[in-house]
Length: 172
Image 1 (cartoon, rainbow, N blue to C red):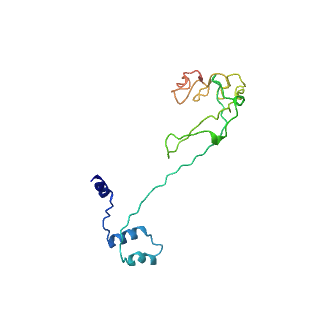
Image 2: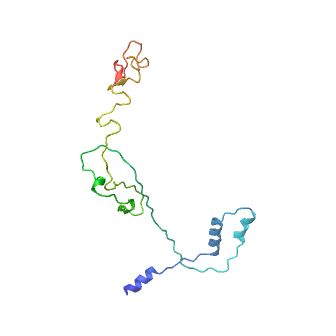
Image 3: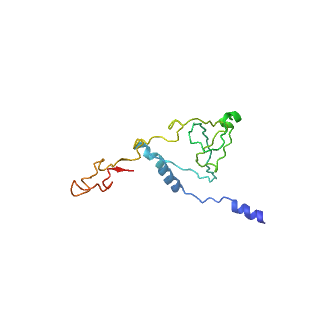
């Protein structure tokens, strides 16, 4: 009894389509290239209509791209997996499981046994480097008064202090 009701609910019952509806759909779908071709779908004779089932499906797939890059970052005291601990695996041997199938995402992972410790190129191992804006002074000229300590557009006379730097001529 249950199986019969399932079969009946699955059974396909297409609605009847008329010749007029078929011609209208054909005219909408066919874009004429020239004026002579415009008559072709209209003069097309339909001899019979046979109902059948057609399935529309979407094929979903994915691709994967792997690349290596060298990254410099400060040492944080964590033991680094260097080459003397083992040989690094081939890039394709590293397992990478996407968090969700068929969704675009970027995944970054360190390749084991490829870390190396070296002296910083910026500060030469000193831990500090000179600021390119103030050149290590800790301050720079006020961009409004350019160190003149007054800003003519911000005050009524040339004797007033720059309202941006309060007359110091610099900003920190």
